[in-house]
Length: 104
Image (cartoon, rainbow, N blue to C red; front, top):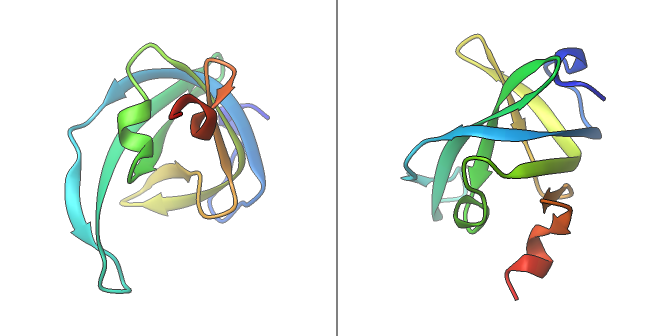
């Protein structure tokens, strides 16, 4: 799937692209009362770009210039902009390697 094809409210999204920007992480409190970190990155392919929401340890695994893939992600809309998240059941790969593998 190309980034230009994703729509808000879509689940099971699989896209690949390059990270072109990454914000500094900020601390938030989830709706469950747990503190965690979140940061936005910009992911781009030949068809367009989308904001990638990174949560927790995924923030430190991704750098500008990395080729990343998202499998089974979900798309939402925040302040009129599309956001892609790995979510609970998705998978993040970096330069062809699973993010969970690269942490070991």
